Image (cartoon, rainbow, N blue to C red; front, side, top):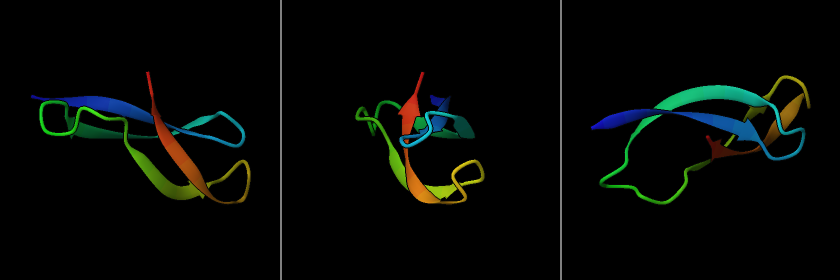
Length: 49
């Protein structure tokens, strides 16, 4: 049931991380504050397609 998703930076729009989530238990899009090596700072990363 777990699907692979990609996390993209909201500032520079680059896709930096991949992770998995259970779509049945968490139908909303995931958001994490993670380090972006292109922005060189911690920014908000949202789930992308």
